Length: 218
Image (cartoon, rainbow, N blue to C red; front, side, top):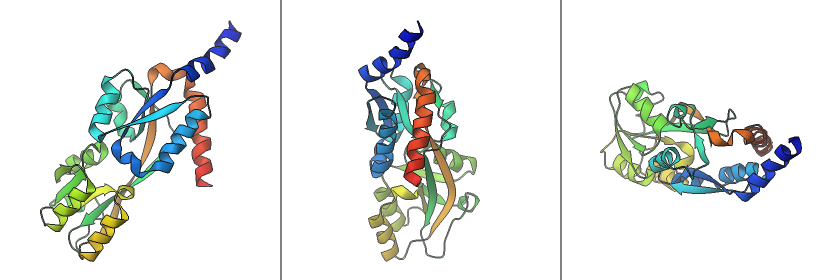
């Protein structure tokens, strides 16, 4: 019996390719995606990332049984991803920044945005939650390009978005327009979520993620 149980794990792992849903914007972080895939490979599992619009990625993870894991979400999303287990290893820290519409109009905290109109990327539940908590008027957009265009047209007062997803070209565009005032308002750790049916691999995967991401930082 013990021999059978010991041999069952690698057979199951190699026979099934893990499907990991992720927001399309994760393509901006290829090294990060590769590290997650590497962590699975290190425990004998072939995994692939299925990219979808941010909101649809979350809905697909919740509603479709073919999904095995969700790439990276905040701790707050545990109440939404009810059929998943959050691996307690922060694998990414997103710097949430505000970009003001005037050089002298900065927003260093959520409270300072209270009487402003803000653009945010659709599907970022943790950012949306903060805006709602502070009663901040916001507009959901499909891209940071759209948000920057709204900022330049004075349709909004600020953009709130992860710094890593604001391209250098967009930052230069803001700077050249004299509109750039960037402030970090929160650093948000993100975690990998795995479906509960894969409980047996969690110890190995947790150690693999720790090792892979520790090596990345060295």
